[in-house]
Image (cartoon, rainbow, N blue to C red; front, side, top):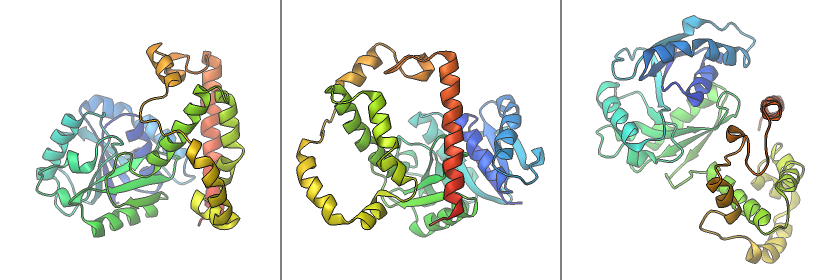
Length: 305
């Protein structure tokens, strides 16, 4: 059985582990707290069973301590998912640099710290990459494989092939720019959405409706580049000349977002963001969100690109 080592015991780690287990891989889940790592096994199994009709077994999971693990036999990949703390990640990678056999690629799920910074000055930095999942990791197909300054492009392609074998949709990002690929596009959209709300042009609810039932609806079928190949680039270019000059080019957080952040309104986790959330409403929205994601995932599997 091929194995993947996942470092960390948070939400992302559990989803990533479940994805590999559902595809027949073994997972070695390593934590700073071994008891915490062991306690996650039932949740990982439950997530994996939701992804596969095949046999899922606890025999596919081993647990251990990050600093002590030494068995790398049959390991195809090592993936770090610990909290977003640069010093902590650098310490872990420095240890992995010495302990993990040099043929095994090592990745970080960090969305904020580039792999060039995490692996700076390490001897085997060429086999290190950002391997960035999106939450919930067991459902969302995308994984960004991001090259650092000294990362080996040929090894990165093999990592992409491994993700493809496990049902993911990897993209190769050739430079570790801030936000990588998907988050840059996502933040461009959010900047304009928040500007429209801030200026009183639309409500948050209407922004959601406009995105979900127009271009967001189409993007579930094809991406933005292919959609314009279908509709025609000349129409897009004509509209762009009119629209581009009026788009937001803010380089700071929108005032309407700053306001709710100062009021400690963080969304569902604090029961209030741009709107208030009761326990029942929050639970129902999370249920709908995951159900819709699974439905979209199923549609994408019917006729892949």
